[in-house]
Amino acid sequence: MRSSSKRTTVESALGLAAGLLALVTVVWPDWIELLTGIDPDHHNGSIELFVVVALFTIAASLGADIYRLRRLTASTAARGATR
Image (cartoon, rainbow, N blue to C red):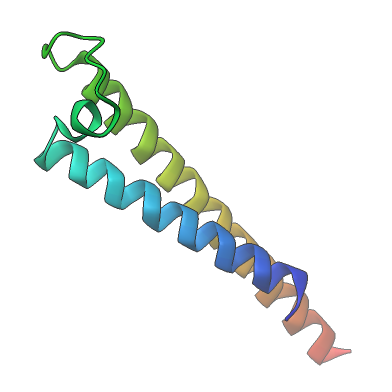
């Protein structure tokens, strides 16, 4: 497996995990308190909002990087085929 393929696989898995955790947080916001036993925002939802925004940002960034890497790989392969 090439290094770009490994990188794409890892980034895809991390992006998927971040997106799923963000969706879980939207649907079930108290999972963080139940898992850790800590309630830093006293159920006002500010921590959950921060987590959702951060996880969606991570997922979107990884998705954009995967898209860029695949386009770069495809254009490099196309240039190599024409030579």
